[in-house]
Length: 164
Image (cartoon, rainbow, N blue to C red; front, top):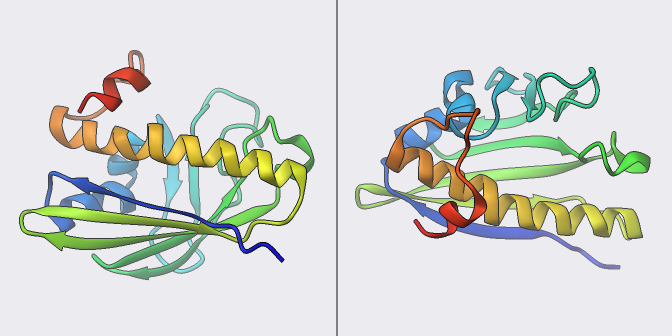
């Protein structure tokens, strides 16, 4: 049995409260993660991130995902589905936990994604999310904290994100 998990952290140039608000408010989510969302930061509240808000319903992003646990300024966990290109497992879900740890005036954000099946399509999803979390989404949060909200008409490139 393979207990795969994605795990990593990023040091962010902002206090915990600021980083927390970026993950738990719709304004915050729209400022770095995706152009639109429906987020209610309470257990069983929606955690729907619309990476493609103009796509048909079901292909926008994380429709149907839910908040699983909330401990303000400490823990946020939510279910996370697969992207539309993973057609056979699109509606399966994994579990993402974010931990927020103060390091002076900065925040160490820890990400853990678990609940992976032993299957080729799940393996492809694992590789997709490893790249998305650590080379795009978390660096984009750092970019947002340094430069302001993302302009979704011209978001920073992966190359720009790696340079900060």
